[in-house]
Length: 321
Image (cartoon, rainbow, N blue to C red; front, side):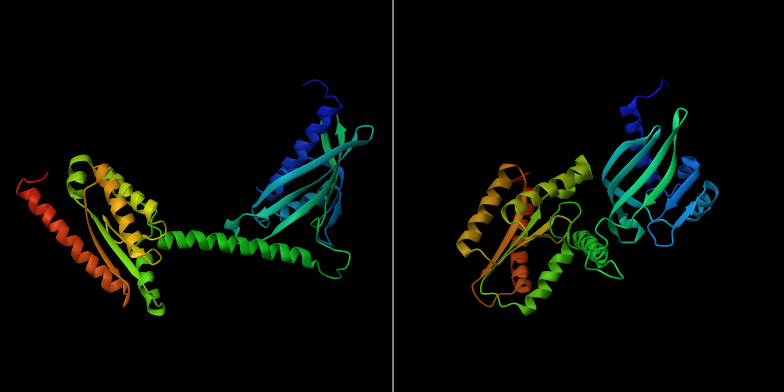
């Protein structure tokens, strides 16, 4: 490699600084950092008592870090490099350091750092490392303890809890195949009804016809696609109101629309599915008083099964295929 010009040296030091920070916080690779150190290195860590000089002493401390630094994610790195003496360069920077959620350690800090490199032959060696406390850790009015970082950490923890809660709710209440609500969510709706006072309620129950035949002739992937297609039609018409209660059975719980609006939507989605060649049986129950999800579900269920019985009777007799 030929001699590097000034800009190339600065760029190499920015890249090396980033690599050192990532090796420390993301991979816990102390040996990589030790390899970059000059014999006369001075290190000042984030803690008040963290400092050492000479590569032997600093290396000893860094090797103690192995297995102790939780895996982190680093973003928004910014580094500035300037030559402060012939062959000597100062690299100052900052970056957001966030613990990986898998570590179960919750911390997010805006870290600032300063490194000094001395160019020795064709490569640089690090002569000074100063890893400061988080950028906003100590405010002027604070004494004794950096409460700002405490709030940052708490906020990050809350964000992780909310995100994990959303994922858990999806796992508990979302049907993995179709994306609509699952039977657990339907059971929850039945339980919540005990504390509600419904003035009106519409229930629709849908069941695919001929799913077994599709599975047998074209495979279960074709059957799954048919189930998903039906679910998509229902969800498009009744978003957040559709539940997959069985293998090919879906319920709609409508508490907001009028009876006329409800029946129009049901007729429209039935027409759409029939036009796509989706064969199904459906039942409806509507009440303007004495509403009960459980009772009306049973009413819609009975109506649906009567329609299904007629379908299979006609197919058996050759009237339909």
